[in-house]
Length: 210
Length: 210
Image 1: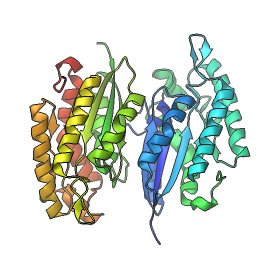
Image 2 (image 1 turned 60 degrees about the vertical axis):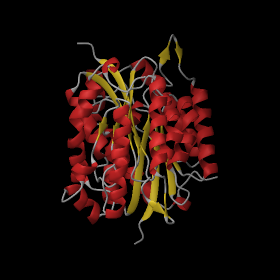
Image 3 (image 1 turned 45 degrees about the horizontal axis):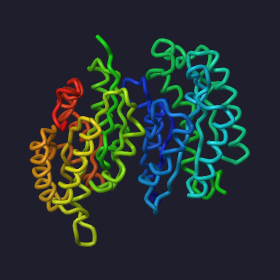
């Protein structure tokens, strides 16, 4: 079996960066470790999460950062995961309105398709703030509907992590937003099979191409 | 004790990215885990290593990637580690001549100082190619001398990892360049105390500022 080279850039916020994990691995590190062990792929993953980044912040930087990491001859793919910073109140108003988050994701997906980079979206998780969680849950549905219409795979995390979970307990014990190792491990467990299946599917057969 | 926020961007090549480590951690992940456990700092580390990047490739992208990750109010710092791709032969000639690698690092350090970002350099490691290693060892000395003249901390890795080491054994068993978990663990062990001491020293007291 030929081992094909695949480069994956994961863009997003502090949850992508793994803030709070004492092992500095987060869900991206755990998903990558599993994929490296399971898939017959020469896989290289770049974690490009940034603390406090909104959808707009990601949009401003992601293409140049991806282009620096994607050789022309590789199967190059993108995961996007943002939203919690968008639903955060700052000086009494939302950092990013839901309609703008949606149009920003739509623009990102269109640009990714124009480059020929298959893209997958991981939805925003809950934090220890019920009012913000109401907004995030609504944004999660909105972004999922957008992706469904574009046949871009979308992995929900919010409903699985909300409630009496390790994610919520660790977030409340720490800074109110970021879990520790168990929360990230649970999130990784939620998404890793779908991400592995997506990585294992040839680029011409995954959704989201236009 | 006040917990001060510190952001660290680590730029470089595939050794920074941790290529070959089945745990997707590399030396940066291991050093970060230790630092998170030991230092009274709100530390966030961004791994910005890219496969095949030379010094010139890093120079072209590092400032915009750092600016996207450094909030104005934080203690923002940079680690640079490159050189092995520079000493690689491609179509019979060096990808980057040593004099150019040196002038590129000098320019990077000058730009870092102008931003007020303390910088530390980790020297290039050996690979399973003795002729290239001779070139890399010479480049290592050249870059170390440059840093010494600028009072920028420089951590040698080459001489410690060359010879009958896990690093060399794993590199030879794999693709000829990248070790596996033990090699990266050994490299992390080499540099982690010095990096922790540097991170623990207030920005105004570390070297390399102009």
